[in-house]
Image (cartoon, helix red, strand yellow):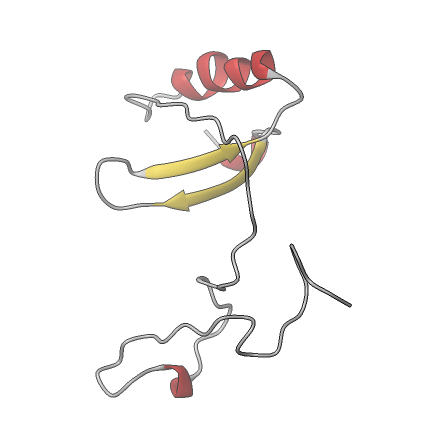
Length: 99
């Protein structure tokens, strides 16, 4: 099993809690998603269960929750990572942005 071989894969995250991983798949139609989940992913030996959820609407977040590099200045006194919104950093772009 290699996620990179899954052409429908758009995003993945390793999670805590009930599920070990979340995959976001994109396909031209529902049968395309069905094929990826039923015929491919569910056949992997390491997969015990799948649950499919369809996104009805999406919006980009204003927060960068996965910084590429953690700078010491972004940690508080207890070593907790502080997230800063793109707006606070002066980022302009995305949904609803004005030029």
